[in-house]
Image 1 (cartoon, one colour):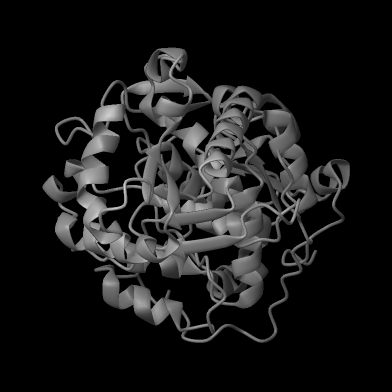
Image 2: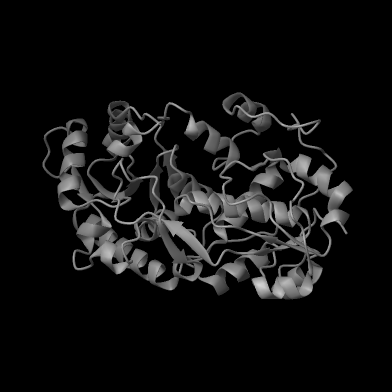
Length: 405
């Protein structure tokens, strides 16, 4: 079978045509980094004609709130269904031609587990297609994994416009759990009401000027970051700014003090809000069991839908949001404008993310060559990232419009 052609947008059809199943592990990273790993696993599974087994649990930080000393401690385990609407996500993946299976269903249908996937990653989509055309028979009837749970998060390099489109569609197929959608909708409604009352421009920003980004190996220059944010926002005054990522009233006051010089001395030129101040009756951490990353999913859903979103390009949260917003919105009044703060961290994470999860429609560049320069990796044998996509490869992703979820 042609493993590069998507089947009809129907779950039964997608599952009927699946010739193997890819088990996606939980990785000890934040939920957005885990999302990146799942998206790439699903893209690879599709290229090999496989169904996917979504993880039953995912990881989260607990009670950390961006403190540098605990930011990398992913000790909490959350049921997948508490983060995503499993049924809606499965339907959305089926619309892109991907079948989701339970562990039991996969074990019944594909009775021969494969100890190792035999894939050398990272690899370009073209390269994976080459490998699938020659070696797909080795995966038939198998349950296998792309990589183990220690691997994250650069696995796939989309090296054609159609590969980029497929990756975006898979990224947007993860539909949040109903209570996350409900709370995000309430926050947005209150925010738009405040902006209307104040006759101000409503903008949401994923603020990543916290100390953890400066204290970690990423070594963010917070002064440069703050100055660029202020430069972007100043022309929009009067401005209602929704801070995504969690911010108390005192934290908003600190951010306001850093940004206000760009807005002159007008008292109402800049107003800051967060979900915490718009809905003060909710104890957000307690409401979500103390799981920081689960609370952040409300912010991600807001970023997915808000009219104007400004992201931080070195953050997986911002990159996932921008990748979803790169698809046509439904309704079209949502996600009108997406921008990124033009500042990167010392390890060029923003540059890496932009090549791996392209969220703009810039002229296609040689992403393999650029990533090779940014990463210190060595591939075995003749496995190499092609400098140009193969013209003969065919990806036909179905057209998916993102609804309200």
